[in-house]
Length: 146
Image (cartoon, rainbow, N blue to C red; front, side, top):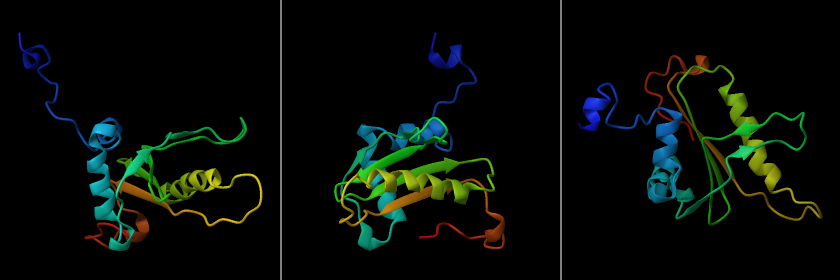
């Protein structure tokens, strides 16, 4: 019996607009080149990414009272830039605020104890959204903002 007969309603392809599908395509080492290509399409030419390493995508906060953050994809370039990539299908009015909050974790990682004599590496948050923010509702052709 073939797989399709046992599971007649099972899709043959992965839906990339789900957390599972998105993470499977862009968040695994064998598909790292796809993530790099995606980042390079989204970023301005002067910020080309050559390679990335995947980072722990769970941040539990510094105390039990802190809100935790779990990123869909979190990676770092060889030059130190950090990238958070999120996919969001359901409308979330405070997605921008959540994105700013998420970006604080890679910034905090760079704040090692001691003398503050270093430059922070860039942190990029990329959101792939299946909805339009109210403040952009009149921009029908909005693809991305950099």
